Amino acid sequence: MINDRGMMKWQGMMLTEHVSMLKNYNQELKREPRPNLDEWDYDAIQHTLDMAIKSKADTKVKLWRDGSFIYNRGIVEGVNLQKREIELQDPFYLLSLKLDEIVDVTIMD
Image (cartoon, rainbow, N blue to C red; front, side, top):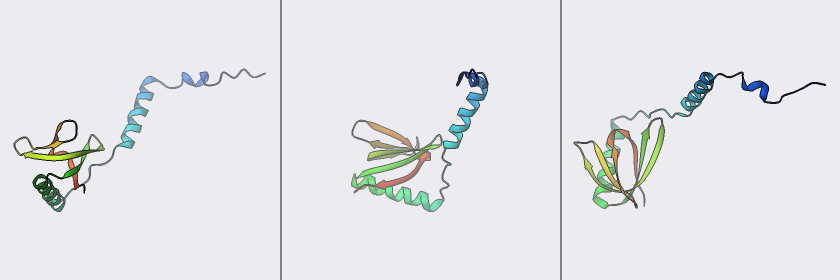
């Protein structure tokens, strides 16, 4: 009769360094590359932000941060050029979003 120990025989095969390297590798695979924006894209973002500020419309802002896309929605209150941030008022609090992280801006109707 064969004495099979199930998964116990595989537990000693992986060192903790190997496990952490595999986790880092899987996280790296999930990272989204930063989109390459040209001057036309930046001009479109600026135009949409200007329209959103003037009309006080509900706006969706797409950010790229740490290899993933983040979406925020609210009303654009203003732009601070010294800090390079926009102020976005969502239903709960005021957000400060960095201009360098903005990838897309859409006015929701």
